[in-house]
Image (cartoon, rainbow, N blue to C red; front, side, top):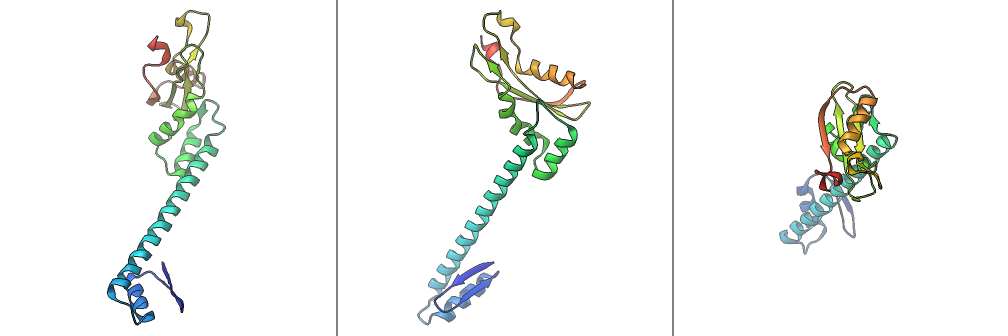
Length: 178
């Protein structure tokens, strides 16, 4: 709906031709150019409201996603993944991408300071698993753990046999860069 206000009345409408007629009837000095200017202003205001509504919906979607994954603890069950898809409208691929920064928080790169996160959808369970790279000071670099290794061990611990999709924040990781 569009709202046009003048000093004498307010018009609520869903039709721009009503705006043209209203502006013309309210002002004997009105010209088509002024009326079309009012229509342009009404359209701009409507677009601004639509954009604000879209931003608010996106913020709500993002906030709801964060609520739903706040207790992930390295794994998100298939049922929770389905709930996230349903409540946010995100696809599984979008969820994987949005989980990457969370997976990076699992990383403990004491040597390289290069945080790598990895996420994957399990083939057997349908759950999503997270992992991050681990580096240990004072021991051979070969004892460090890649984000993908962390992810695989985490998934196996939860009974997973394979993966449908894997997403990684960076490749090669800090371990491999050394």
